[in-house]
Length: 334
Ligand code: KG4
Ligand code: ZN
Image 1 (cartoon, protein in one colour):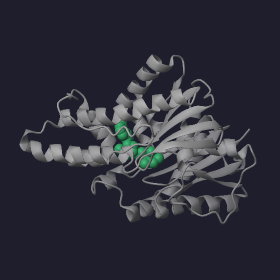
Image 2 (cartoon, helix red, strand yellow; image 1 turned 180 degrees about the vertical axis):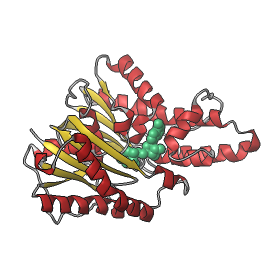
Image 3 (cartoon, rainbow, N blue to C red; image 1 turned 45 degrees about the horizontal axis):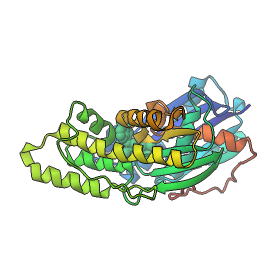
Image 4 (cartoon, rainbow, N blue to C red; image 1 turned 135 degrees about the vertical axis):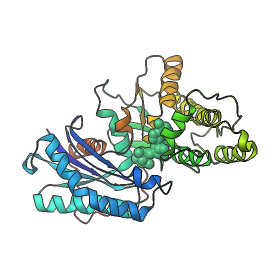
């Protein structure tokens, strides 16, 4: 049995959670900085670090309180050490080191992207089976990954330019929608006509890579050309459909070509309802009974329960990190 404290500060959520055996969430506390970053329309790294510094101790204390646990109940302190914003990661990592040293608990650094994948172990759904194809789509990453075993990843494809979430955020800004852009675009697109504006899709076959910069430019051009005649709901719907089309279709093709026993979604963009629906629909059509695993929305966006879950499977194999562990702002999953 393992009871793990997870800590996550890689971007703009300060989070701490307690998870048992990589599957059972005892507490999952997330302090979001969205309200502050909304004013600047994006994350200002230095401000993010300062807000993490202010929030981290109360957030960790609350995670223990909500779980009804004490330090003596814990087996490990797990913390995101990359990828992410250096200054933001440092707050979580230094807090984790201090707690590990002071409380005599081992420390383990976790890759944030691996954390996103393990959100799929935190829900009562079918036990994920290998090999598994996982689409990790967040504000900083768009990776298509083949997972052969716990902790064993091969990257099939990645974005060549913007991440999917970044494309949502930038398109939202161009359309005058709020921050973060993903939920704002999804909401604006409801009832919009996705066929009103014709937008490009970068298929990049036969690779499993993605590209969203052409789409972004097309949105900008559409906004400029339409002027006052722009129908935001229709452009939001057209944009969302272009992104969902490529992500869903390529994920299904990758699953089929790699003999996947399961498909998993991960990362903030996996919160997108049309994306979830399309992948499920395509999978049922093309792959029959291969299960599609999708974490609930609150576990798709950044949280620390997913970090504790990923840590469990590595800790079970004996992995721990030294106290001189450093942050890695760039840290691929494979
Ligand atoms: O995983 P995450 O919380 O943070 C990173 O690791 O980047 O992902 C945040 C990204 C943002 O770009 C946000 O716009 C996007 O996820 N996102 C969405 C939705 N909810 C969040 N994108 C599309 N549809 C959504 N419903
Ligand atoms: Zn993330």
